[in-house]
Image (cartoon, rainbow, N blue to C red; front, side, top):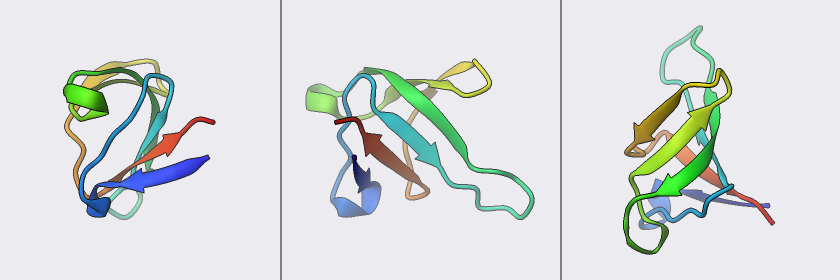
Length: 71
């Protein structure tokens, strides 16, 4: 598994990759979800993500996000 963060000059993901959103507040856990769709060109954001609690959201990743690429 490899990890890409937005600090690496851009983010790219594929369907099935996971995205981790780190918390920037004490007491709020990070969130992890599965990327269902990449709406940008060639795997670029935004992403449709299904989070662990089951809800789906359109995500424009910021510096607190990283993609966990599946093998």
